[in-house]
Length: 203
Image (cartoon, rainbow, N blue to C red; front, side, top):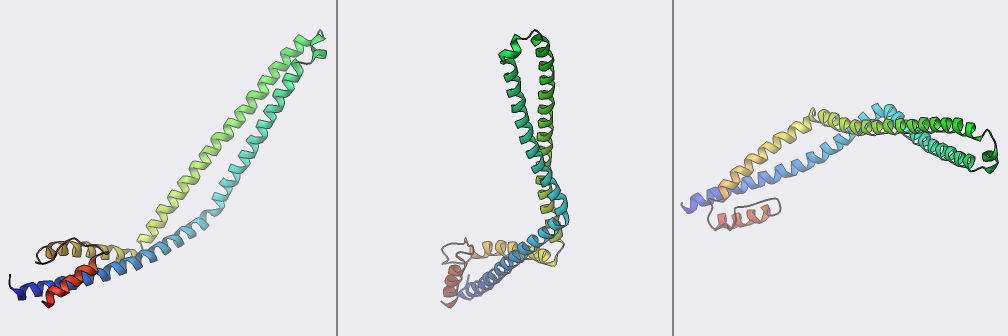
């Protein structure tokens, strides 16, 4: 290949690299804009569903308080039961076996009922947690969908396609230029490659 051909190709590659730098800069700016838009979309969607979410959170907190109170009630009933069966005054009474039978039956029924209520509240809270998690994911998807409708996202995709095309072209062209130590490049060494190519073109 003649020196003139090498210089011409080198100059062309330099222009492509500079073009690639410009595209990278535009992509960075667009990424920042899109990120800000995404936050804005997400915030607006959150506000529109805020009442529903706050109700779920309030129900979740109320359920926790109810479970705490029920656990206290269970402990109280158990303590009352043990106090009854250890009460020597009650044990001495002729009616104690009958009282024991009915108290035991009532105690078991009460404890079973409270444990069932605790379980129901626990299950309800699990569903509320899952609903909130799903709601957050749904908001993210909806925000992304809204964001994709914007001109900035379309421009971002178009620039990405141009970037990929340039990278593909440059990977081939850089390998064809003699005296270039490495054909690999990224944004960290692109200026170094341009400097080397400028020296080659000036030689």
